[in-house]
Amino acid sequence: MIIRQITLDDQQQYLELIHKAYQSVEALGIHFAAATADLDFICEHITNNAVYGLQKSGQLVSTLSIRFPWGNNPGPYGLPHLGWFATDPDYKQLGLGNELMQWVEEHILINVLKAPAVTLGTAENHPWLIKMYEKYHFRRIGHANLGHGHTTIYLQKILNEALYQNWQNRQCQTNPQIV
Image (cartoon, rainbow, N blue to C red; front, top):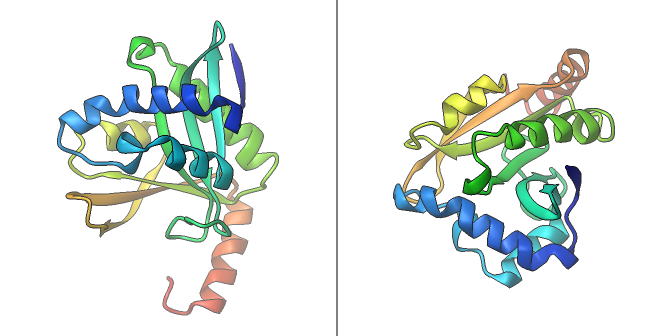
């Protein structure tokens, strides 16, 4: 297995994985942007975010993206924000998504970005995603109706308590309404 950053050279394989992985979510009536992304949107996503993939026998089988607070589509909390987490249904229940999530967390979020915490959002009405993220030690921190036909639940994972406290103190100083 290889974990690496996805590039524009991977756009077609990435598109195919995303569509295949998100079919079951669409079948639930939950509409995530990734499910209907076309090749142009895929290229924009790869260009503007850090996209990582796990390959097995040369095939892309799991992927996870990081949106940045300074990027064109930041998460709502001023922290790196995970998205487009997907695993090929033919490779489900093998722990590959978990392996990719742990690798991105350790190697990129903690060691490279020195992120105090990370956030993600998912549909409130998805039957198992929130529980899965809570198993990864994410906790609920908010919700929003973004107009996609479901309520988005936001979750956060603190990666470094000391950095998080410093970040939170700075946030409270610049935005007194944040508690």
